[in-house]
Length: 212
Image (cartoon, rainbow, N blue to C red):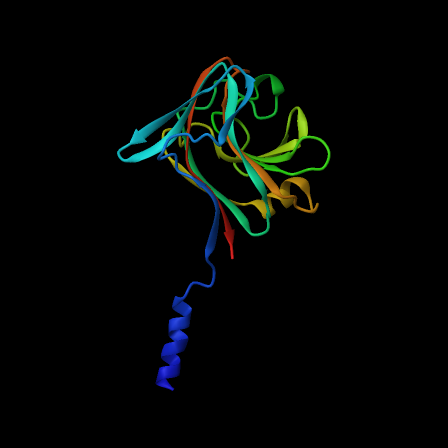
């Protein structure tokens, strides 16, 4: 009986779930060629910065709106989670989350999903200017792009914040119970063209993982 109890106890020490790594980028080797520019207004400056031995991307927007994105090969979304960390210097002065004229965010991370007609639908995670954390809303110029506020304002400016999101849960939250399409892209964007300001956002350790 004692031996069987030892086996049972050992079983509880074995993880029930393990994460399958689908995509990972830590920028230790710079910004690879698979990251392509996504340009709207001007060009946000992207550079590799270091803190000790760690490397990360710094995105500095000077009255500009552009980002970097990587194409993915139609990843199945079931069980997929997105992890990353980010920080800001400050939110854009007079920036809005809903007014297209001042729709700027110091950091935004987005996931693109395959659609048969029209541009891909996207889930966007933003460091908000006015709306509280947890608030969801549509992009002011397109309902195909929907957003979730994760951080708000300058309270945590200058600090690295770790994030993790369940993409299936967030898709249902933003788009309803529609069938979840394949994941075809991932990117980030720092913009300030609407507010005509200068803001700096940082991104690191971006990963897509699937819970087995």
